[in-house]
Length: 392
Ligand SMILES: Cc1cc2nc3c(=O)[nH]c(=O)nc-3n(C[C@H](O)[C@H](O)[C@H](O)COP(=O)(O)OP(=O)(O)OC[C@H]3O[C@@H](n4cnc5c(N)ncnc54)[C@H](O)[C@@H]3O)c2cc1C
Image 1 (cartoon, rainbow, N blue to C red):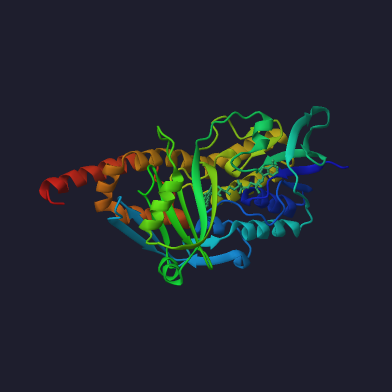
Image 2 (image 1 turned 90 degrees about the horizontal axis):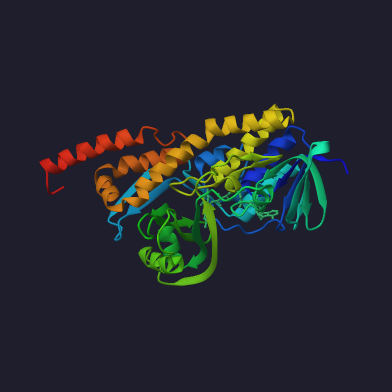
């Protein structure tokens, strides 16, 4: 069989986005997916506006709900509450089975070959022919390039020789049905509760007819948490006493980029395989799509030249993804490791911070590079106002 231009492993948002862009450019693409589509994917299904903006086609058939308001609760007793609203939907709620299928169907319009229900099991280089050879449990596929879009566990990255350098965090996701009264009460807003998990948060995302409720820990701890207990407590915080139906799922999110590069041999890493989820929020769909778009751009512009594509991909990541992630890692440390100081500061600056975070979700700003100076300045102002008004 003729070799493919590229074989993409994984049909999540990163892999499907690459497939769409490469197929649009006339590349001959194979997409290998271990599940049969549509498949459930453990995810809150909160697609922030900037991620949605990376998709220049109609996704309405996969939209469960559009939310124009975000609420963020801080403090063990949820004593600090901040809200932000925007005209455009801040978070579009999706279920990943329909959403990921919609993206794959978009790629299918350009006649790509899909091997569903097949796992990658081996990876070799055929240097003589300038090809990579991917083995699945059913066949052998030769291609000029391999795109590892196979998520947090990324067997492809392991087979290509990457050691683990990403920070990996655990998260639980529950799809639950609650009483009509509770659903009505919780379905108008995107809700984050920052202090219901040590160094992490809980979320309540309303879908069409149910809630996606989850808890995650996003910073290293000295002990392992029993997240199930935190989920049960979180239901109390949300005022849910009766869960009518519940499906529990657990998985991991890599929240820092790999430290040893994103290309090896003929393999390019994107999305969770590369560690591109946001270090503060663990929101990963936006950068999954963006990195998929960027790798496709690099490959097409290189005219399938490996060295050129490697340089271009790194350049695009340096421009569009990595600086924000590196600032995000530092901000996450400040945010999760100094809870008392953070909440004290938020009494004064909570609304400003909530608006800024919402702007990041909307894609109109990034994390401030000069965040240290800005925090130092604001701390000084705060200490000054504390001195003037000790009751503050
Ligand atoms: C509990 C939880 C909640 C989250 N909530 C949100 C949220 O609300 N919003 C948000 O933006 N992000 C969220 N994330 C993060 C988000 O899910 C990921 O960042 C995103 O899915 C990454 O996309 P991807 O395409 O890189 O990988 P994935 O979406 O994981 O896709 C990888 C694909 O590869 C396939 N695959 C795996 N192994 C193989 C193999 N051996 N052979 C072939 N195929 C294979 C998988 O079946 C899968 O289809 C959440 C994550 C978790 C765990």
